[in-house]
Image 1 (cartoon, rainbow, N blue to C red):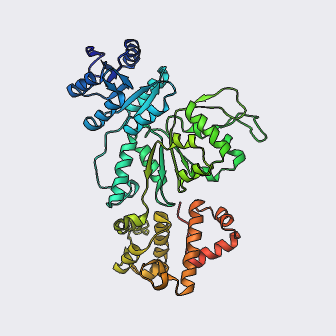
Image 2 (image 1 turned 30 degrees about the vertical axis):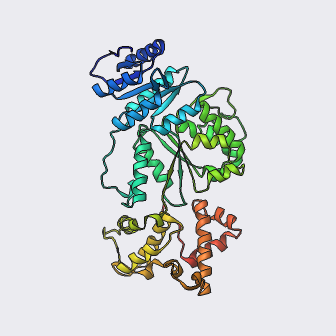
Image 3 (image 1 turned 90 degrees about the vertical axis):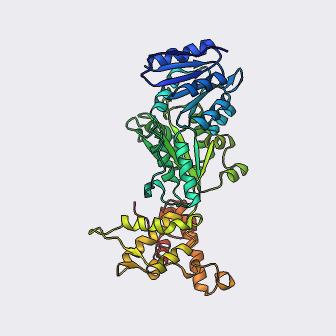
Length: 454
């Protein structure tokens, strides 16, 4: 067994390098020393575990293949015994499966052989910027309020994902807080001081997608009067959040896959490529697996984006959180005098029994309407204007009587689903529903459906 070596000043950040090949170990050591870091080297899993028990490190770099085991063994060991230590693995060129396995096991990131020193420096700087792991403090609305098991599990997963660079796929119903979850992953991670760039894939015309994602050079096409950066360039060093990624056409999926694999993009009209370093988080309310099976979403892109899935619970899965969440919203909606309205007991029970097809976004709409309609200090069930048939599962005949209530409920569901799919773009929702914009506006007013505040 090779003896562990330590080089550099012990006062600086310390990095543990684990590799049984002396030349690779020396290359990594020299690069890290030039960055002003202290370096300890080890040649096996057992030797690395001994060093981890002997002292504290700020980062671990390990090869995947070691004489007495695999780098994954060390990743799992660190996850169990050194939870705050980021670990990156070095994989063989083209070994995507190993890289994905490492990320799922809890690795911060990975590097492919031959190791690019530029990528190594970027990874190290990013890992050393990781904030301290947050304690389980009382959450705020921006931190996903709620103490239900489903919400606690979501918060714990977000905290874990924030300490990684793995691509994340956020699934969940429309209005369940997928973008908020993505922002929290970014804000609690190593890229928190860089940009978070949200992109609604369903809102970009197909003929503009390439120029919007990758940018363009002056004169590339009619109207290109100056160079422009794309989403990837703007998000360089930060996080790119692709909302409703399932809406991307197949042609754009191919280009997106290449950009993610190569970490390089070419502006429209350019001959050279730009290196980009972005963390990918995507979301959709649609079933990506089903879309892959039907051929509407590329399987290779799916595996690139869905390394780790975060499922955001629907509001009906967190009924015990509804009152606290509603009260928090009412406090934010307080009037000029700072006085917030309260929910009466009957109003609380009505909300707790409601299914919320539009989830948190719908709850906010309901409360905004109730605040406008309420004539006192307490919101009553009548101020909420919930469809009676939605408040209980015990209606006779499946809630189909009276007929008008049943029809209103069906119509409301369809409209809310269309609005959720189009992020409350009423023109697009009307087109999806097959009705005119004027008809949609009338129906929304009749059913009490309001557009959320920005």
